[in-house]
Length: 159
Length: 225
Image (tube, rainbow over all chains, first blue to last red; front, side):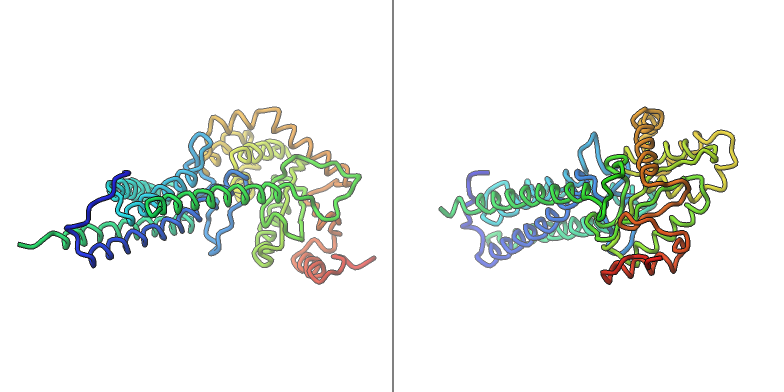
């Protein structure tokens, strides 16, 4: 990932567009990192998480699915968001392969989010607003990255 | 220099995330063990950490000594939830198990709730025990019923059973009982607001609201008798 791409075939406007998308993804990842760090710290401290809307957060965040062998799922999420942030920043600075790693990480997080939504809806029968917010962030990230390849196609030289 | 810029960003965020997380963790841990305002020197501390919910450094601490098989305790539990919502962020509710000998399954219920607490789901279990109190109280054997509740709230059943039958859980209940005895508790529910026992005539919706309002205004919770 150390080598930078040569951007001779990419038009300046496309390059700017892509950079904008990657910075956008980095910003979303920062929000997710903040939220998941908060939840991880609370989980490890054994503190009670209060839902702003009065939803039943503890049924989800206190469930057997919230941690695996003592490792809080929120901590794994924080690591995921940090990876997304790092890859997005490197991709914005046109580091080769960073965008591939970014796509892979977001893909894994997207699938995990679908599984977690399934658990909340059909197994726990309770939703946690922090989890839903994180799901929304992942969907937005995925949407942004789906938009990014379209920008790449525009950069192909004509004729 | 420009090549290092993204790595500087990444390092900065890593430091901020780890630093922020550690600071938050320390602050929350500190709050968990925050003493109750007006703590009496003569009282024994009870189980540590106690089961509590609400804002950890809330200025108003309601400490209840309750028996999960006692019907008035179940009624008080639902009222206290309302009170917590009304005074969101300003109340910390601490619950101490104080099973009475007159209730056949009170110790079993306390053990089940404490075992759920070992998996960070004390309140979910105590809610379920209170909500179904009329049903399980009549049964001869309650362990299978509480095991069903444990499964319903997503506990690891094997761990739940092991914790429920452990000496540690029994010791916690014993410590809460000792604390209650040191404070002169003889019946349930007995409630303390910032370590001042709530007189019987205040053990109702209006009385408790009035006591909390008085504390919020900086006055003593109960008028001098």
